[in-house]
Length: 371
Image (cartoon, rainbow, N blue to C red; front, side, top):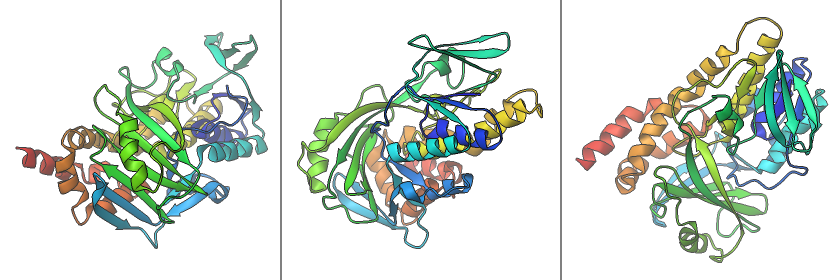
């Protein structure tokens, strides 16, 4: 069993496969654990999918979410008592999950950059750029948004849709209060900005989610960073392109599965990527274990389960994003500022509610106001 990519999705799959008694080889192209351009927001509900504690990699528990329109007109959602949202550093989370997979018997090989992947005589053969080769009965593609393997094997959407992001990691807290996260609307065309606390610092990001042009992130940061108590040029900056959900498609083939960003599972409205990454890794492992054990003759249950558990909500999330980000001021006034809206968003982020629970009312309200 090969898992290509030792990020959150791949490492989660490797852990559950190894724990189920499968022989697993986890391949990672990077020799060392790199800083990843990710906000790090993660629903606490993901803990249910793992038999070990995730708290060691949680930097902060979010109890308060602040929303603002062009740095003013603030709306606050108080989450105290329920603590549904965690902030993690991706490099710490990924390393934690990979180490747990190794503890269960998985073999981690790094660096191993997959140059080609072929199936011959019932076995998948992965060849590294230095010529090394590994064979296995099944493969999990988990090598992120820049993966070409998903498209090569027809997994996920034919028309890949990308969100463009800029992430900034800052080494102090500025004026962001402990236990608080912030979402800023209005500064970013067709998107939003965010600020999430990490241990001893803050992750700030700018993302655009519809249209073909990336946001002018530098211009946004010149306004946003001073409002958080930072110099407008501060921080380590990383650009990234995220594959966001773009329709219902097969995520499996003959002995092959795509998970996480490689499967285009990122939330098209709020850019949540960690929950679907971990969910897909766990679902992939369960489906593959049944298939490898001969309990089923294909992997169709994986695509079906991900559609039910994630895709059906994301179909509504995509529709909300298309309306909200085209008419963001109306969206903020009629969506975010409604008395129940902040709590609804918190429930979506926590996994307690899906976009389908609110979408029809939200879209109708926005379209009627525009007309």
